[in-house]
Image 1 (cartoon, rainbow over the protein chains, first blue to last red):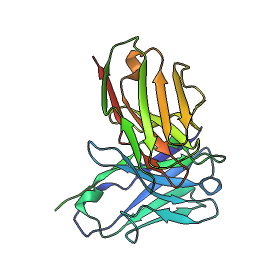
Image 2 (image 1 turned 90 degrees about the vertical axis):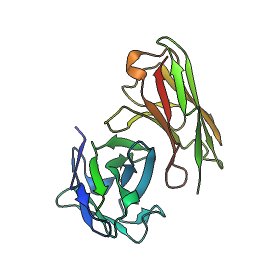
Image 3 (image 1 turned 30 degrees about the vertical axis):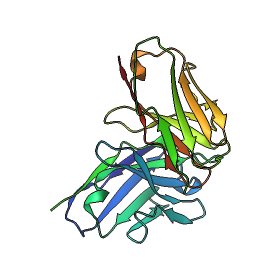
Amino acid sequence: EVQLVESGGGLVQPGGSLRLSCAASGFTVSSNYMSWVRQAPGRGLEWVSVIYSGGSTYYADSVKGRFTISRDNSKNTLYLQMNSLRAVDTAVYYCARGEKREPYFDYWGQGTLVTVSS
Amino acid sequence: DIQMTQSPSTLSASVGDRVTITCRASQSVSSWLAWYQQKPGKAPKLLIYKASSLESGVPSRFSGSGSGTEFTLTISSLQPDDFATYYCQQYNSLWTFGQGTKVEIK
């Protein structure tokens, strides 16, 4: 059974850093592309970043230069390193698995809340 | 960047109603469009991919249609479990979501 479990969220001050983790089971993260999607309180979904099976990465303009996506194949875990955090980054962050044949998201984690506030 | 616009933003309906949600893309996304359902406090759930393909396990009352820039999600007979927010998503060029359509009880 495919499962994605996020962790690492919490309260951080503006300008601070946080690293989110997404532990996967039931499949290998390196064989699928994996994304982070966020949802600000009461708002819609926003795609944040992707790492392809070959290792290429892409970012939304809103986080480019501040966030870094990576994975640890030995731990079957996806990460999102978030630096220079701003209040507007406050959101629930979901990791999502991309289906192999077409790039829609077939499995999602339960999400982890990041709050950026002084 | 491709923008996705859903209408309406909110829809009030009764159990048994036929419901249609529209999603428009700012440029053609071919058939690379998915629909998700989200309930409060939960992760989104995939309903439809490639504009009209029903995800395994999703009830057949859900259907999708369209191509290019205009798409629809239809619920043929609304059930109590269907009151939720629905998002379209293009995956032709990276990913963009619509702003969501909340289906609420009339």
